Length: 314
Image 1 (cartoon, rainbow, N blue to C red):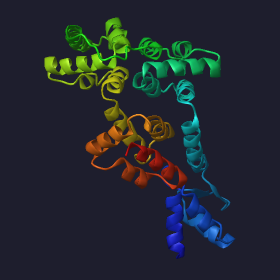
Image 2: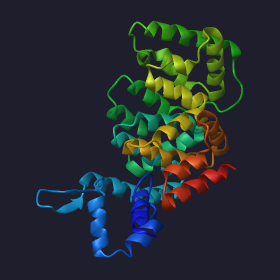
Image 3: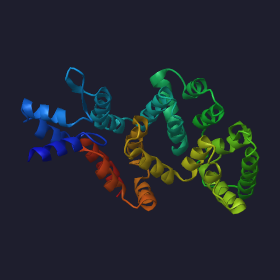
Image 4: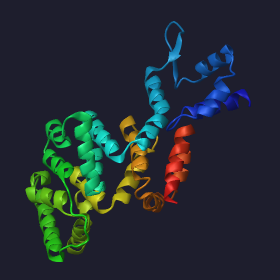
């Protein structure tokens, strides 16, 4: 391989999600000191030179590469965990890093009732605290009431729904959203929180459909200014569309590390649940297959592992 080709291959191996381990080994392992120096001088995205002509890695890229080398390991560890432990650790990490309300909503709203209960039990065992108390203590804004209610929920899993109640609650939500246009915070409306935090998913899907019939709009679209409620409704009523949107955002160039983490989280947690539907929705929404998108943006062992998990939906 020509030197210019090797330089390009090496740059690609360091770019994207994960790293191309085979390319790094085959190229860097045989380079002489002079070739490594040429690479440092010609790759100013990664290396800098101070006033003494001292060449060194840019600190930002050192940290970035550490994340990329660990991405495959993190995916393997998450995949081999019991799902309850995995969700408990995701919840704890989400509270520690922000908090990341998106992860709290995902776990609380896209798991079956027994799965969420299991995660709460695992949280007790792992951290000697309840997730409810940690959410209540760690979140101070008006969203606290909603998030505590969501992680505490144990929804009815059956198929029976009450048409009249669903239609009545759709009308109520329509009135509440219109009233919120006068700067009244919907998160402080106890009835709104009660509906989304306690009703079964079939019931809420019926509410969602009645809302469209009553207003001509989709409920989540009318919640555009209420991100917590909007994502709650999307996770409960159309999870594949929600996950497709988050996945696409996390695979765009130059996104921050927290957004990148969604790729591993979503693919690992949905591989045995609804991956086939998720792939169909992603292809419909973005005009490209999810495996092809992963091929484009990920590298090495991490890419291969993600593709293996995604193929479980075939």
